Length: 170
Length: 85
Image (cartoon, rainbow over all chains, first blue to last red; front, side, top):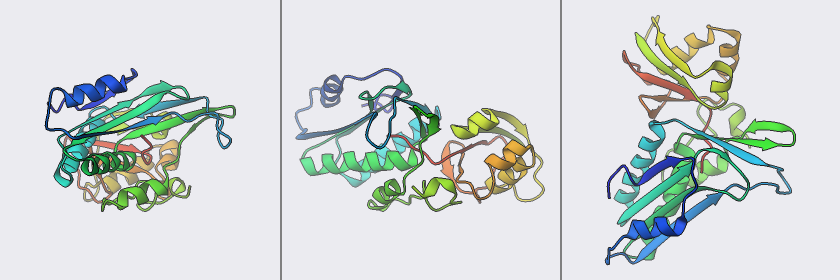
């Protein structure tokens, strides 16, 4: 699989079934394909979010995720991986991100998928802005996401640590 | 030294997208020194890049820290903590 095709940042939606089928291709040595789909959660009891707008850092975002996949390959028995992340304006229920991994056995695929998601949440340059009845607001980074990344031994002070400040207390 | 400066998310909204910058550092050219110098450029910069605010920095499209040295021609980006996924 080429490096260009396994990380995609795009405005358009994706077809999960078609992407998983393309990832596996005609390989017969794959025993497990694990995937995670993140969706826009809106109109909940806590937050009346009517839309999300996602921004990224063209160039760096792709490079950062590619490096994450290389790291996942070195840690787990990963035979292939795919990350698609959408940007632009998205509505509740829409898919934001697809992470898919495959391996001979399920454990590596599950772990690599969760590792990539935890890494992405704390180290990939994306920013979310919520639209609510009160107006628009940037989403604060969560310390819980740093803790999730730290479980894998990843240094992560995205929300907390560093210069601290208002981003770290939620 | 000549730098390519970028801002993202809330910093882009208040400071603009950035651009080419000619900077004569007084001391060691680090990300911290650049951030401190940028704070002197306007009230908006002073507020957005204040020492207590959570601002992350990337140098040449890799996450960096404040002590990271800058070379001539470097791309330096400042942005809030990331919130993708």
